[in-house]
Length: 161
Figure 1: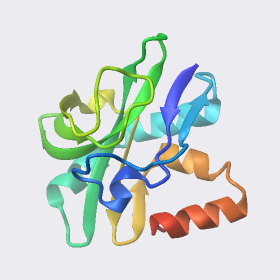
Figure 2: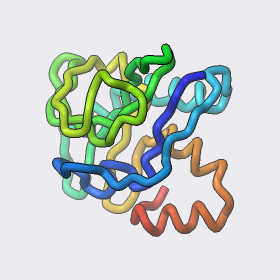
Figure 3: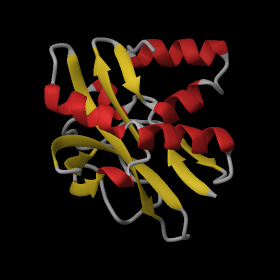
């Protein structure tokens, strides 16, 4: 099983940029690595990463909170996907800061500066006003919430799709 981390506060959506701890709650969810919908969400993120890079460099008014998700190995041999606030990009290499606490991986920790290639990401997202752009794995989880849970989540995160 692949391990995925859903940040109900959406890490970047709430502007997490340097807090000492993320109060994300119980948001650690395992998803089978054969889950077709999750694999499709990751594939969509990978195939559209150029859109993210273009938007990051443009930094148009109203856009903010640029994040990518990267898998890191865990001691059990699985993966934990961590959100990373993007600080810079050059030639397909991103520099950023880990934006959430790890549950299992010992590879990174909250606030740690990291470097990764765009080919390593499993998701990306940013805000355009209140609208979440990207966030394909987040949408995967939203699709599985009850209408009441989804409404509460969207209100708490202050986002629109």
